Image (cartoon, rainbow, N blue to C red; front, side, top):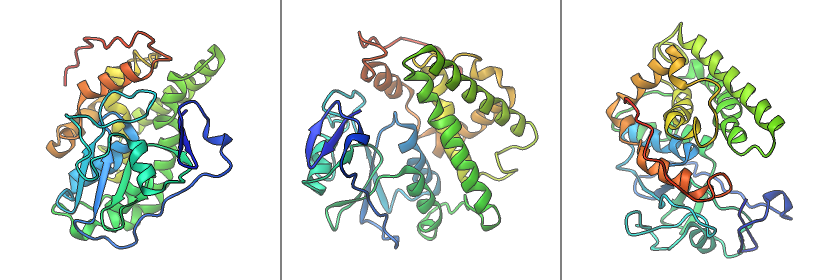
Length: 293
């Protein structure tokens, strides 16, 4: 893991070794034109708030941009294809240092940048997605109620479950450093996928017939599964397409134009296969697989 400690970059230091870890606080009031979301088309966690922004039509009030696909020991970088359009920095490390020269913690996407205060005000993707779907809803051009009041508690609980058992668990599979760790993580992940497949056999979306925020938590993991996770992470106990209801559900979601716009499979492949040198030391980016959708 890579971190900043008191503003100094350490490419091989664990966050648990830090004496302190700085945090950010999301704005309580939605304000058009003030904030910019830095994300990566590869990161499933950054995909959450980006999906909410795009689907609800909040892109006219919150601007967005991506970091470069290839990640080196210097962390997330910007390049000519994916520049820092707000601060003209060369890397996310530089952006964090600009916000707080003495920052200690991980340097990750997503980042919510306050253009008035020249500071980072958000870094937690779950909280960000929830805030954009609720507090920012009055500013949306396409105000879909992703968190209806009668489902708010159930959505929060399922989101947490998805985060632990699917979104993060697939990384435990891919980054496992021993057979027992890999086997245990695989069992949890594929048991979760079986449960979701059964659930979607009885409803169109995770909470019934209407799209909710929970669907935007699950989808980022599903769209990365065939191109990356099944091969690169060895998450291949079963192919995703063998989960009949889950696969139908994914295809229905990516058929929504504003959802499809957020997905860049070639960028994803370039990032994962190039950046994870400990898994793919020669950084060979595969030509496949061919994906039907």
